[in-house]
Image (cartoon, rainbow, N blue to C red; front, side, top):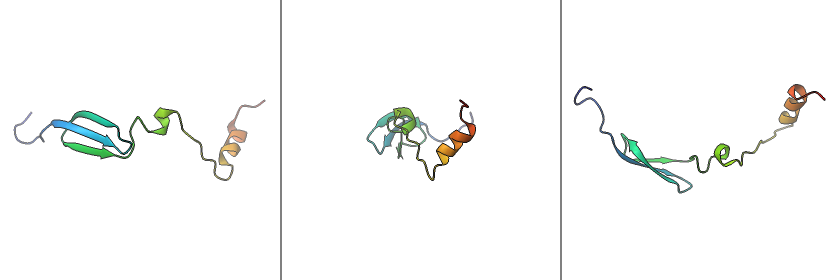
Length: 67
């Protein structure tokens, strides 16, 4: 690596809006995020399908399993 062209790599604290704190290393000392793996619906299993105007049902009728 060339000297003087790379940013300093320091300990970093990532803070989520849910209160989860992750310690890692980065070029920034502190990072604030709105969503993390502790509160994201995909990872928590609380994912909801929002059906607007019956689109999900229409998709299931068109591409779903045939009885």
